[in-house]
Image (cartoon, rainbow, N blue to C red; front, side):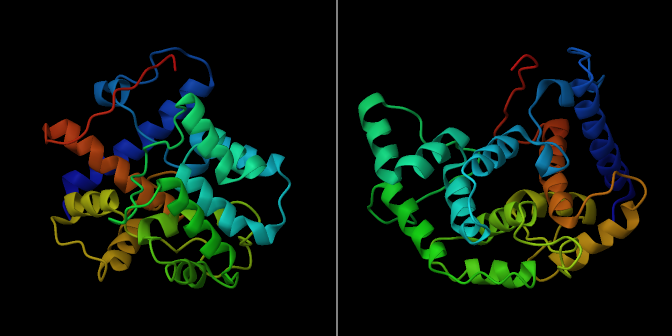
Length: 262
């Protein structure tokens, strides 16, 4: 484990949380002296604090859905990744989104997550509808996050990362009880960003085989040094940290500027 990288990770997580706190206090726009955190966009250390998640959660709440409807609803939500599109779909179905797209050219998908049709020649909205229906027909276990995740992964086209995102929504909206679900705190799925983050800290070599050991080891050494987060949020922190190091080292990749007044 690279001690310097570990210290940088601890600093990043704490300073990103401080930015959230300072911004909530209304001290515009000097929330940090760190130029990278000031100039570029980073998600919050806890997913539930992100604006997009809050907006999606509000739409789902407004529709007063039964708990059994949540797996399909959050699958749809994360495939679209747009609260406005989700609201239309819950009111009018996929045909409502098609009508909106075709008549006004409205943006239906938020591109934070790349959703493809896996090479299949099909209208993307038809593809989304098919995946959502497949999840609706599933019995998604509520006994553990891992079992729920494995059930979602049986749906062709629903990848590991996206299934993990759906589980993260379900654990924070009634489907899984924090106090009775055994892996509520410890469950996490590796994404491309968290792999890069762990590689920076461990010196490379992160795979799906050693991901759990590495993230649990990181959890142990950072306990008490960063705000308390469950491992899905720790995974998210690693993803954002990988962007921070990339910007810091001038490595190639997409750069998303941050607008302090947006």
